[in-house]
Length: 96
View 1 (cartoon, helix red, strand yellow):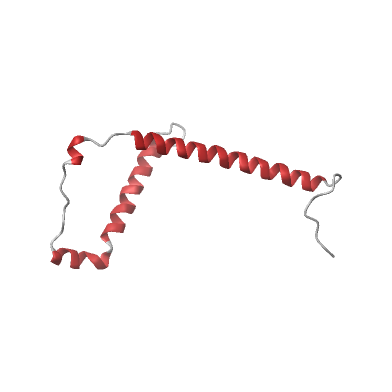
View 2: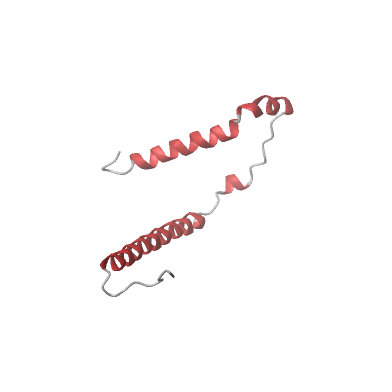
């Protein structure tokens, strides 16, 4: 027997599933719009002059060899991300 791709008009579970899918699609659209708008705002912030003149920093080979097994780069990224999230969450009145 072949499976039906469409629902019958008297099947309420199919209509409710359609409605649920539409609500999910609407909230995903709102979330995508919000994140895209936030990205546009962040990208519009100009780079300060003092940051555009900074030269790249390089570690001596001995120091780089020593810290490579400890994965310090990932650890610093995780710590900065955690402190940033903590700072932002503390600014929300009913959470922080």
